[in-house]
Amino acid sequence: MNRRQFLGGATLLSQASRRPKNILLLIGDDHGRHAGAYGDAQARTPNLDRLAKEGVCFTNAFCTTASCSASRSVMLSGLQNHANGQYGHAHAEHHFSYLPFVKPTPRLLKDSGYLSGIVGKLHVGPDPVFGWDYQAGGGRDVQAIAESSRKFIQSAGNKPWYLHVGYIDPHRGRAAGTDEFGNMDYPGVKRISFDPAKTRVPSFLPDLPEVRQDVAQYYEAANRLDQGIGMLLEVLKETGHIDNTLILYAGDNGMPFPNAKTNTYDAGIRLPFIVRAPGQTRRGVVNNAMVSFVDILPTFLEWAGAKGPDYPLHGRSLLPILEQENPAGWEEIHFSHTYHEITMYYPMRGMRTRRHKYIRNLFAELEYPFASDLWASPTWQAILKQGEGGMVGKRPVRQYLHRAPEELFDITRDPDEVHNLATSAEHRGVLEQMRAQVDAYRRKTKDPWVINDNYKRGAAPAPSGEGRRGRKKKG
Image 1 (tube, rainbow, N blue to C red):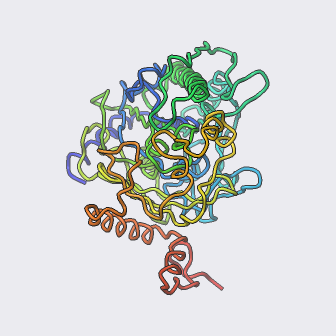
Image 2 (cartoon, rainbow, N blue to C red; image 1 turned 90 degrees about the horizontal axis):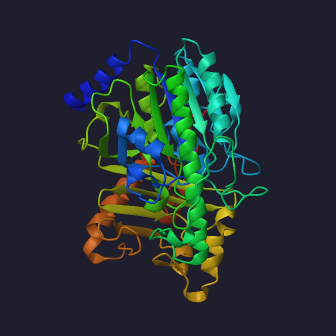
């Protein structure tokens, strides 16, 4: 960290130190980079756009796994999900949850005097480990979410607080009287519909009538999310906390369509990520650092002046680089996906630089599995009707379902990640370098799936007496 970076973080902290340093984390469910701030002209997101103008818009922010529970587990723990135990969905028969040693954000901040509240979707377990002081639901009723948030903020008095708000929009989900994305009339929401005929379909999807309808409905749900965020920002202003609250907005994974959600292609993991910090001397900053969701918890800990856990985190604080456009030393990210639902076992590990992406499909012999909502979606069913030569955007269906053990893409020349360069002699050097970096990162972060690689290579497995953090188990 250079002197300029350090002073940037110190300045933010000193300017905000006169009042309680609150933290507000806002999460859009399955919300990709579909916002005006990210150049999407057909999105209607004035509140997110305003938040970006008042704060910092990160252009290269990535989740580590494009699956709701697993992604959120990383936000809250600062650990890749292969290390924190939340390998997939928390609910129902899936039942994945943190390993006993993990101390998530609310637990760590509570030790520093913070009150913590959860409004809306959490989707990480087990619940007792968080120690919430306040809990409320809300579903798709964004006005109710704002009012529940108001109750928590007002109840905190002069104590610092951490508020975690998990919206349901724009996740798929039909209910009585709604369409594929739960669109209907809601209290306080001005309903804005999108014309399928005028809707632009992303390049990673086929331009079919069913897909256009699906995408149009998605944009309506994304607009409702944005209206909810506007309501919550008004609550901060009305309660006098807009200027002493660190606000972070992120989608948990890409839009709920093939090639995006559950995938490690950019449509699944490159996401909106906006930070507004009290004490910023520059606003409307566009930050091009390559950042990851493992960086969220270290950022919150530094902001709060809170002590971290007794084990190393996988990220670093963003505060020192918040007001910089092109900070040095932020040139790559790592990702790790294992499960979505319990039946969706397809472990992938990899990394991305500004130019290249490397994906290791640990069990490439398996057919790529489907999230239940994606399989039943009008989009996928329309793709299936294309028959043997069907396309998922620019990718043949057979290539989507059956993947190579290693995938290497030149993002600058192939942004849709269709042309696999892993067998290209010209790119052998890049492949070997990224493969080695991923192997080293997996060992460093104690990926349990490394043992599978050892077996495939015929190497001896790691000693069974080693614990989760490299400590010998007792007994």
